Amino acid sequence: MSKPFARIINVYSRFIGFSLTFILPAVIIVGLALSTFNPVNFVDATFTNWVNLVWVGFVLNSFILAFNAILVTLSFDAEVNKLTKEGTPINSAAGFRNLERKYKASNFYLFIISFFALLSWAIFTLSIWGVENVAKFLNLSDSATDSFSMISLYLSVSSMIFTIAAAIAIRIPSISGLKVGTMVKYYVASRHPYVLESLFSDSIYTLLDPITRVYFIKWCEKISDNLEFDFAPAIQPPVKRQRIAVQNILVLLYLHFRLPNVMDMDTLRDELLRIVPENKVDYIMEGEQLNIERWIDIFEHLTKETKEVFLIVDRIVLTLRETPEIIDSKDFWITSAVPPIQKKDETQDIVFLLFNCKKGDTDPQKITMRFNGADELSPHDFEIDFELIPYDDFVTIPKETDELLTEQKRLFVKLVTGILYQGTGIWISVHSENIGTNLIAIDFSTADAPIETQIFNLRVVKDIKFYLQSWGPKILASLGIFLPILRALLGL
Picture 1 (cartoon, rainbow, N blue to C red):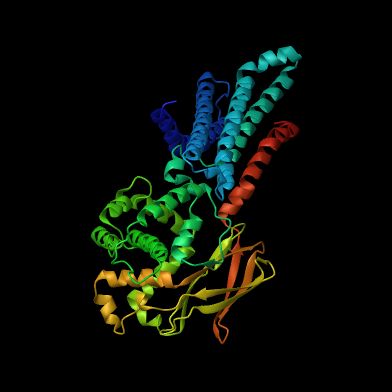
Picture 2: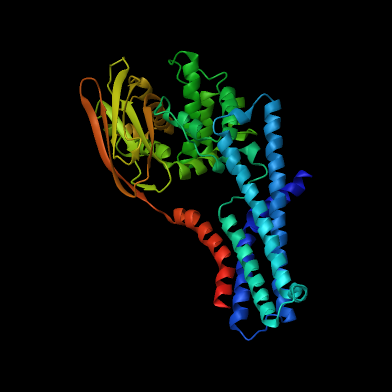
């Protein structure tokens, strides 16, 4: 099958066909309901042909969706095999099975929809045009024939309701998802380390779906070669400079995404040239795999799905722009993102950034974090130890903060990236089955003295998505089963 044709089918399925899965059944059901309460004879040829035409359109649309599922599955398998032959066995990547299961489950549901769509249309056709032949074959009376016709009609409507129930649970995958990382919506990071040496780059690496993660690794390797000497020249060994370079470039791209008026294209290019050679800048901004446009798409998705990590960056930016002296006011600066509400059946991310502000202390600082949570929370109680990198001139904030607010953007970018590099991230995922308020206390301390204790409530609620996904298909499926039985018992 040619790729252009497959893409046309995929675009139709995603943007038109999926909507028609809900619209066409609604039109049919409304039409049948109106025929019940209006003096229109249901067996009138014009009305019957109109309903039949819509029903045929519904069946054809369902078959197109099922055909698209075949094309997408073939594309998925072909790309996995291609990556394996190129030396990247993507099916062994962390999270791949979870991604593959969700990806192919959506395709399987499309076959269920097409089956019930065909079944509903076949029963409808039988109830209108074939009931007399069946009645003769079974030797039914006129009243029994009418009842059989009505039961067949309601069975056809019930089968169609099953298709709506199945459609609620699916997404239409993109046929080009593997190559460009658009399958990220199917991937949910299920594991991550509590302590992140690099809050920003480690977080992004954890959040990326396995496909994009492969390209991210290649991207990092390429931009880490031949670093410009102007970039962090005092940082040794070179491997450490490479890690800082990757994080700083990610921060630059994020600032461009988040604050394009501050980090415009010219400023972005100038900052990138300070870190990597010009040919690497072109690769980052216009490359085929993870260029600036692709990173904007990734950031747009991640800032919606995992706000907490990026809230930390935004708060660093806000603090440096408005009150930078706050960062230097204590020996340790802690900023956090703790969402107050957790949706039922979802895991909530709690993120902290700890920054060592003790000037003149060249030794790493050992920190202990104690987490104490309500009985219904998972995790409940635990304790971890970790080290903070010593403070150095890489992130020295001017004594006169007006200088920071008025000087060139380079100093501002240097401080944001420096604090992220110097700081240590703590990322905890909390889950609760308890509807209501859950108390959490988090305590940070050194061996000599306490640093800070944060106490907050995590409220768990049932959102509309929970009700739709949990009860919508069940109600519709139950209605589909019991509707013809109820009609028969009531003699309607």
